[in-house]
Image (cartoon, rainbow, N blue to C red):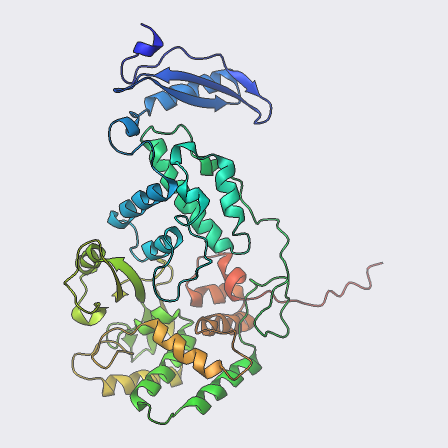
Length: 446
């Protein structure tokens, strides 16, 4: 039987392994019969000839029919269309956190309303996005990602999207390789250009990602600015007090803003032992309507734990809507922690428990007892620091500051405990607690 007449899934004769000096490996290939059309070529490589042959046999065992000829994908599918297919699959995957889809969606499609940046680099709006996925090569992906050298998080997110999207073609047999896998990591040794740290005086401008908590003086400056900002004329005292209690609770727990807003009066607070449990977080995101219905069922959300968009439920399943809800777990399992609270914080919690309206379960609810979006707290924060030298800060600065004060007194392991990080996690020093720069006194060593 000739190779042209190979039955589906039947391999042809193996090629002789050839040495590739550039890749330092032996390369080998063969043809495999397809149910429709001509045979496809399967490639493999290995450090030795026997290993290359063994790897090729493994690839043949994992072979799947060419999807483009049996209707899964069009042969002319573009990179942007492929990313959309992957995103739809991601949104239907119940094992994934639904809020992540919002960030992926914004990297694929340009914003069409709101405060969208016309100059933002997205996959659909780029040259790469308009290319045929079957004709895309690693250097096309590399050139696209190099346009985002100044924003590592954005580059890494788009690289992840592209890798997962092209893997669909590989898994379905339409491509033999994933072009993103050949793109080297960028940024590990890259020299950083000086940047403006938004008015920070004593920070190193060459390391803009270094943790920046409040110093003791800056913390005092913020509390003074907060007291001076309130009360405001024609503003509701109830809302002002809620914000004051929010900053107190967020600092005491070293909590993310969403974690502080998710604390419940009875379930999460032990008033006798003065302990507060961080057991959930508020998610403010954009989801498709079918995802909203899914999380309500999956998390068993009550009416006070979710804020639906106006007009709900009169939406099609694929419509994208804004929603806020209480997720019954934190970012990581380690983040679910119980913390001993100080007298001032416990006094605030007892006061709010006594004043809570019937049926209100959250420490910091809306007027109707529902969850509060963390964006509301961020807006008030920015107004408070607007006329100070702390304009660079955000509510998350309270978390970093609290962890730094703990580390100064008890060491970095204690800071990891209050932050809810893993033992020996590098995230603590990388994003929350700056390195302690000591004087190197070795002058007597001659």
